[in-house]
Amino acid sequence: MTHPRDAHAPVDPREVDLGGIRGWLFDLDGVLTPTAIVHMHAWARLFAPFLDERGAEPYRDADYFAYIDGKPRYDGVRSLLESRGIRLPEGEVSDAPTEETVHGLGNRKNEAFNATLAEEGVQPYPASVALLDAIERAGGDVAVVSSSKNAPAVLAAAGIAERFEVVVDGAVAAREGIPGKPAPDMFERAAELLGLPPEECAVIEDAESGVKAGASGPFGVVVGVDRGVGREALAELGADVIVDELDELIPALERAGETSAALNDGVDPQTPSPTPTEEDRA
Ligand SMILES: O=P(O)(O)OC[C@H]1O[C@@H](O)[C@H](O)[C@@H](O)[C@@H]1O
Image (cartoon, rainbow, N blue to C red):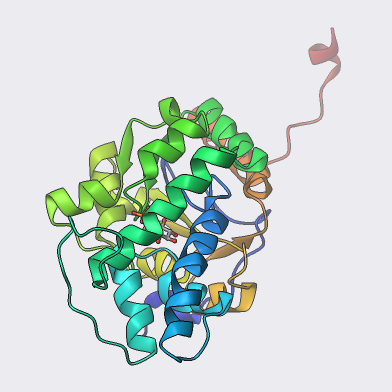
């Protein structure tokens, strides 16, 4: 599938035009908190022995990025099983973690995830908090858009829950029947809840499925955060700008604020200030 962003080479984070952006739609795991790695390890704890017992091709970290990262829980299970040609009964959400069903396996992984979260806790990425602070100073709106049904628990554990009035997570998507990533719908719903057109919102994502979701919607800008997917892949998927850490966007955000303040004052920000006259100095 092609989409309008395919043709664009990513712009430098210092050069990106954030002038029209009023809303910021943040993925959670791997963007605000280093929990992508907790999810990744929990999936490995599920699938390494599971595939081994079946004599299937062994589980590798690359499988996480290709089939699971960013997708709703049971979609991740289905996608990985499909990659190995394994079919299991769907089962029910209420299945015990010991059941050999799609839902049982997903619930087994969820136990592993919650055990690690409880044991180790979680701290947000400092550079992501720095960007949140800068957005707050600039008067922007923020939302979390996460496939995870554990998003509220992760936000609370990281101490950043109160920063977000809008959270569109896996539970909200299931309740409202919103298609999960890589569809753009969860991000569009978050923009709607912020009361902003998607064109005035930035999508911030680290996962393939999430960048695809951003690039296939009408969002103002798609920011790819490289936490392992790789710059080249993020660019191919349609990221407009790629960063290692989110504080790299702060200069562009501050410049956009100065530009709009100058425009509001009727001053062309491109025009250098006139040389002060003797009168000015007096
Ligand atoms: O199982 P949960 O917590 O609802 O999360 C679903 C998915 O949420 C995403 O945010 C993670 O990137 C995935 O790794 C995870 O599988």
